[in-house]
Length: 209
Image (cartoon, one colour):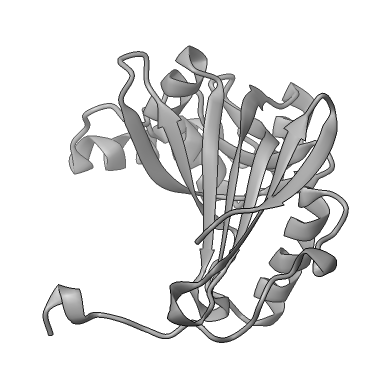
């Protein structure tokens, strides 16, 4: 089938202003719970888009690992490409796409490192292999598979069963300033409802699809 002929109808739900929660993170939590109960595959998978010092954008999938009134948390190597991007430009965008529900959420805002204590708590909750993996991988740097496996074997032996968190690995929190909820609708007349933070207050509006 030609790519131009790939189409699907969107008619599962609708999104009206009257149904929105007072704040975007409350609304996000509601939708996230619905995605969980709908058995959406990896509902916490999200696209993280950053901008490097050279002004070029970069995007990749990361996993949401924390959510509260302060924002959304993910973890990575601070020296990775995304970490270097955020050091140069500490603003980013997150995108969730829950295809079975025909829903999308876009969030934009300032990104900051979470506290060392918060990073320690999450790091220590991970499986042992993942904790050692944080030491093994010089993320985003060239490496052979053989070298990677050699480093894993050596560090698994030297670090033992209780490896500490590497100082270069930890969490970031995106503090939303713009959040858009998208619900697919028939005839491509989708619902796009937006929260925008202005002077500490959330304002809501509808965008044309």
